[in-house]
Image (tube, rainbow, N blue to C red):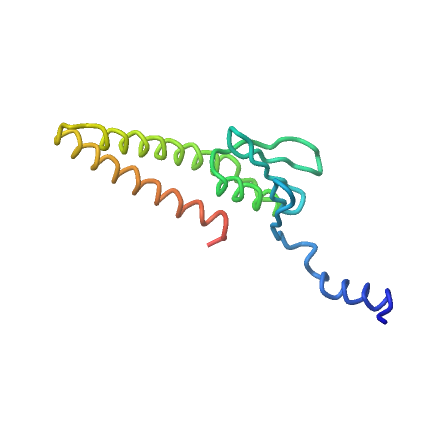
Length: 140
């Protein structure tokens, strides 16, 4: 009923201008943004440059992997800044897990109160880091 030429023309109209836009899409166990691929591993998230067929880096969190991939796909080099945020977020995440465990298992009220304060500090710092990471992802 519809000719292949009409379908091909329609496809070209829809995709025109999208070649330069970094649209993420999931394919299998990976996320692709242009030529940058993010894969989940048991040690975090691996980021690959499919064009050059090299591993760029490894991150702990998916959000930092997406920030790196989005900026690399747009030819912006923010690798060092985002890796520092990833390391700081991992530190505060591990601190929060530790403080929660102490709060749950301790019977000493003073220890519990100190750890609750430190847990609040770790959560606040994580929130600040997440906001700065959002600027790399959303360009705000």
